[in-house]
Structure formats: structure tokens, C-alpha cells
Length: 221
Ligand SMILES: Cc1cc2nc3c(=O)[nH]c(=O)nc-3n(C[C@H](O)[C@H](O)[C@H](O)COP(=O)(O)O)c2cc1C
Image 1 (spheres, rainbow, N blue to C red):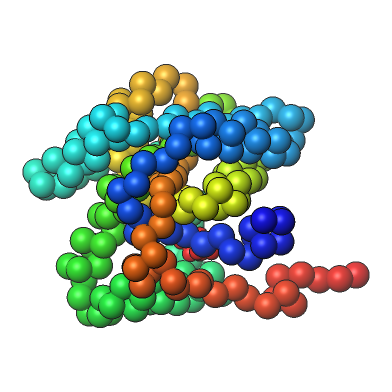
Image 2: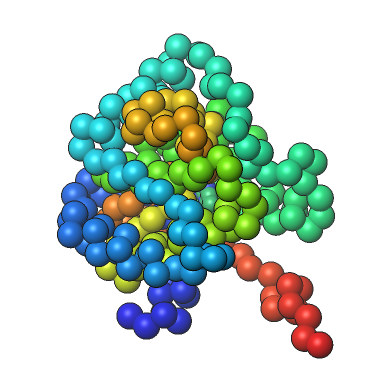
């Protein structure tokens, strides 16, 4: 698969089969993803991979919290800026509508939407999860480096036939995640990544999200 094909073919996968993921593939993809560029070559990313018992224990701990109706701790960062403005607000809204339409969940069905959102904390059924953490002393520039690393990793895993979904949703339960993976207090959780074999029968995996055309985000001078 060449890089154009990989970029065009990757999409967020939100339904997985139970088929295990070959550890050697993960090792190869993570090693290669570290070729992603970063300012000053700081390589500010840290990755924790969970599978098997460590994955299941984490999923259980979040589900138990949800069942107890216990509120999550205060957020460590804002996933979106407050009062998102146009055109980003509309893009987010449309994306959500399309996602729930692909899942056949009606706009008014708030409880089903919440149930679907909670599937994030089961990695959408993926057998492997990865967590990206970063030293709290790092700033916006290094956080942007995390994005480059993550996309490189997602493309490499896609080229290996695996599905992925980056998941900021995990940041809601940052305390449970960091406790489970033993993150030092100096580092904070950015996001999780669900990794597994895409469920070919799932309609949500067939949905392709929109993009705005080139002239809406590029100016040639
Ligand atoms: C850093 C990051 C965090 C994300 N967090 C979530 C998430 O918590 N749950 C989810 O379903 N999708 C999440 N996504 C996926 C986006 O919704 C998705 O990338 C976007 O809608 C574009 O769709 P595509 O990835 O299929 O091209 C995240 C993506 C990124 C890059």
C-alpha cells in the first residue's frame, strides 16, 4: 500500500472483531511511527499498550464507575474550546449526525447516543488499546507533535489491515487509565487508540466522514 492509498483508505473504525492483534505488527508499527517528525526531535510521545487482562481490567473499572453513577474527575484539558464557533461548530454537529445515522440511531434518542458514546470505553470491542501520554511541562508545539506521531501510527496499522480509532473520550476517565497503566504524575493522558480487526459487517465502519474542499483551508500566495 503506498502512502496515498493509506491516507485515502484510513478511517476511524468503531466496530471490531475479537480476533487478536499480532504483537509483532504492533511492535513494528510503533517503531516505525517514531520516525514521525517532532520539533527539535524531542519525540515527546509516550505509548502504553493494553491487551488481555490489563485491557479488560481497565474497561471493567470504567464500566463499574458508570454503573455506580459516579461522576468522572475534573478534566485535565478541554477536548474542544468552549462555545465552538462557525464553521467548526457545524462541522462537529454534522459529523455527529452522520455518525449516528450510520449507526441507525435517531437524533432524538439521547439515551442510545449515550450508550454508543460509552462504547468508547470498551475500545469499541477492539482487543488492543494504546494510550498516548505526554509530560505536563510540554506545550502546544509538542502536543502538535503527538498528532503527527498518532497519524503515522494509524496509517501504518491501516497498511497492516488493522482498524484504529483515536479516542479523546478516554481523557474523561484519566484517573482510572493512569492508575491502571502506572503513569507517573509528571505525565498526563492525551488520548487512547482502539486497535483491532475491523468488523466488516458493521455499517458504522462503512461511513466516510466529510472534508471541506481545499480552497476552504488553503491560500496560495
Ligand atoms: C486525537 C483524536 C481524538 C479522537 N477522539 C475520538 C473519540 O473519543 N471517539 C470517537 O468516536 N472518535 C474520535 N476521534 C475520531 C474523529 O471523530 C475522526 O477522526 C473524524 O470524525 C474524522 O473521521 P475519520 O477518522 O474516519 O477520517 C478522534 C480523532 C482524533 C484525531
